[in-house]
Length: 124
Image (cartoon, rainbow, N blue to C red; front, side, top):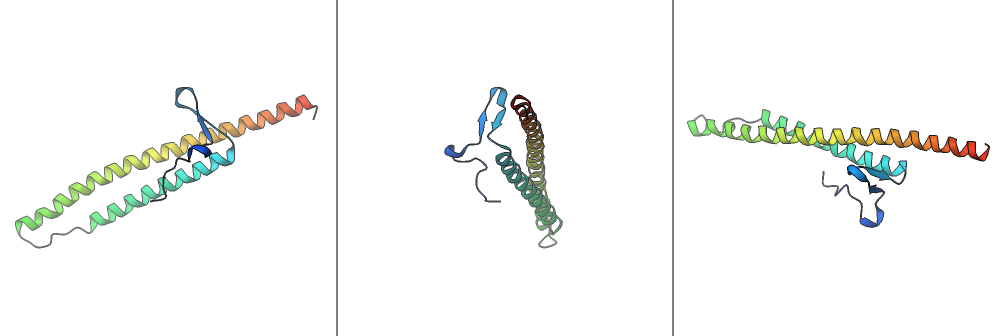
């Protein structure tokens, strides 16, 4: 992933915190950019999960003695926890994408409504 933070520098913030944890975005283009970045995060987390699962399928004991047979069990337990964490992160990112997309749809509808009101006031 390593693409850096999803937060913009303070001088470039497009969203302003509102009451109750809500945010207001400056424009739809900025919101589209944020949605695209979160989709990339979500997809990257899901790809990482696929790699963890594939790695887990490759684990075999290095030898047939008792201690060597325990090694894959320990590794699988560790990867199980990593997969659980990965699934939780993917679910969070996906939920956030869905919320952003819903907010975008609402903003777009409100923008269109504002344009129509302005046309009526201007007589157009």
